[in-house]
Length: 144
Length: 93
Image (cartoon, rainbow over all chains, first blue to last red; front, top):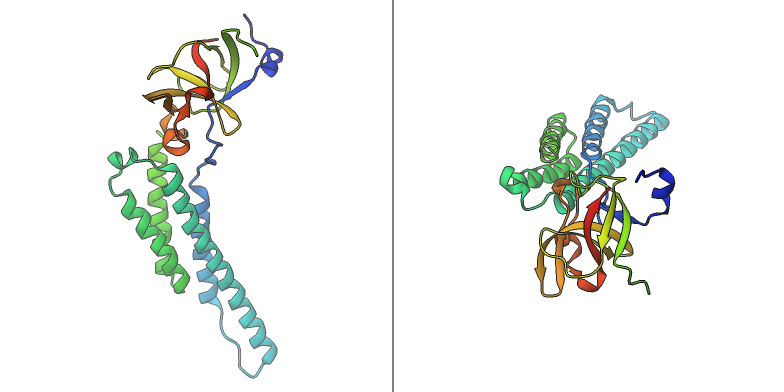
């Protein structure tokens, strides 16, 4: 019997889906968040404090620094959350057989998110990018 | 209530690859009890779902998708009571 799209439209659907309760799992969000933190730290380090006599310039500088730090804080938290989503909802016990150090990797990466919040240091942001990239590789491997 | 023993569904989603793809039609037989290894269609959280039976525990079934890395299973949403099972898949076309 030929199944036309008309026939299919009237049949009830059986979902082989992940949408209850899980979402779509992807490694891109944590990678972009780590990259954002790195860019923001570069921006912070490139700023120079103005002459303290120039009140307006000082205020503008403080405004820029504050706003940049606010976004760094936000994206370090996003990075941490995205890593944890993969850990709690995507990775399963069976993945540990192939990736026995998975828990440690997640632990160190999420800790690094906190370090990036506390510091203004390109080495720390580079380390976060590296740790996140390694977890993204494991994610890609696990999908094969 | 409809006791006709067969019911057709169209599959949507990837968690039963490679056995069942999005767009596959399946024929479900509604009588009898499903066994481990059978593919069942069941109701969960308002959705009609299709998964494979991993284990029977009393009158409940533990199910999982074949496409392991892309599916949720009973570890995530609990065992399926017999009352929620529509039937087992006996044919695909």
